[in-house]
Image 1 (spheres, rainbow, N blue to C red):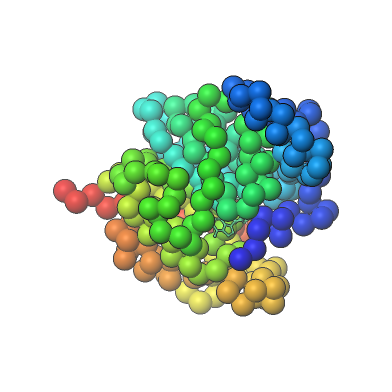
Image 2: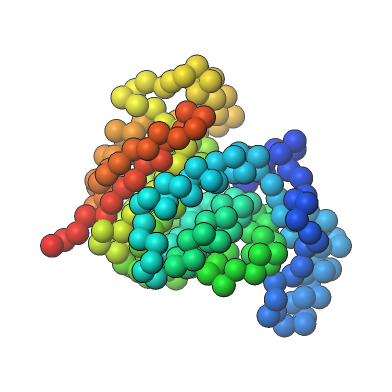
Length: 253
Ligand SMILES: C[S@@+](CC[C@H](N)C(=O)[O-])C[C@H]1O[C@@H](n2cnc3c(N)ncnc32)[C@H](O)[C@@H]1O
C-alpha cells in the first residue's frame, strides 16, 4: 500500500514557510531530546509538509462543513487520512466547537500533522493517531462505537485500494452516532461515466500506478454505505471537478 509521499511527490513537498519545527509542548524532556535526535538523523521528520491541492481545496471544503454541521454544540470529529495536517488545522481554527482527531497511515505524514499541531497550538485538535482504514475499526486507536458526530475523508478513496474504502464505510457505520455524518471529498464517476477528460486521464494514470486505485462510482459508494447503515444525503459540486459526498448514519428510531 502506498504512503503519503506518493501524493506529495517531489515538486509538491516543501518545507512550509510557517516557522521552525518545534516538538509538541507538554512532552517529557527525554521525548523532546528524541525528537531533536530523530530530526538530525532524518531532516524530513517533523516537517510541515505542504500539498498544493490541500491549500486550494481547504476553503471550499470548510464552506461545505460550515453548511452541514452544527457550529455551536460540542462535536467530535475523526479525520481519516489527514495527509499533511493542513486541512485539520484550517478547519479547527474556524469550527472551534468541534474536537478534531486527525489520523494517518503514513508515518511521515503523522510527523507533519504533529508539526502543524505544534505550530498552531490548537486546543481542539488531538494528537494524530496511526489509523489504517483497511483494518477493522477495533484497531482504530480505541475510538468507541457511536462516539463521533463527523467522519471526514479527503482525497483517499481514489488513491487507495478498495479495502480502504470498504473499511472507511464500515468504520464510519459503527463509530458515528445515529444521525452522524460521513463527508468524503474527491473526484468520482457518476453512473459509470467519468467527466471531464482531465478526470478520465487522471483515472487512467492512477490505474497505471496501481490497478486497485482509480475513481469510484458514486452509486457503488452508495451501495457500500447502505450496507453499513449510511445513506447518501447530498452531493455538492466542488471546484476542479471534485465533489463532496455527504452520507448520514440512519437512526434506529
Ligand atoms: C492524496 S493523499 C490525501 C491526503 C489528505 N487527505 C489531503 O487531501 O491532502 C491520500 C492519503 O491516503 C492515505 N492512505 C493510503 N492508504 C491508507 C490507509 N490504508 N489508511 C489510511 N490512510 C491511507 C495516504 O497516507 C495519504 O495521506
